[in-house]
Image (cartoon, rainbow, N blue to C red; front, side):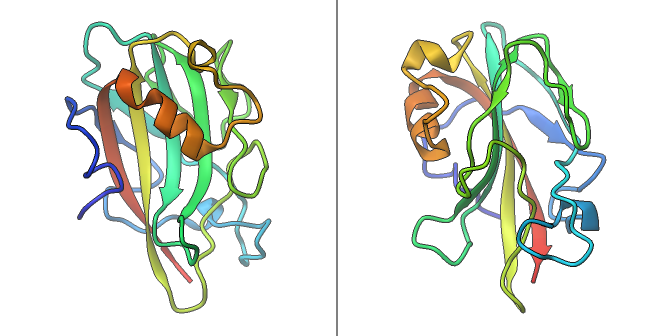
Length: 172
């Protein structure tokens, strides 16, 4: 399966896993969106862990992006930045991020995880990604709380030293 990162410059691979969704597997009900009215949805972020971090990693960005959302630009559901270099996982529904880490406002302009909500009958493939950066924080790149996930992605691109992605499936 292709990912939205396939057309970007190649970098070494991180191994990304989740206890909530297997690569190519369906999201569990809690990872669907209550905000968008999906029955049983809880907008609960999935657990995500990563290994294979290269020397020189100073921080991480974790995100969930749906390139198949019914918009010309896809839909950013979640982006956590400034995760310290010693971080190796985020728990399900994480409420307390490591010191210094923060959530970028998603495409609904909410600084939180918004779960899957594809239209009725649709099957969307979501890129749950972890990117290792050679900078300690995105503030060094001009990123602030009003930056969009797309802008963050653009700004970090030259600083990504490793990346891992698993694909999760959401069904409408």
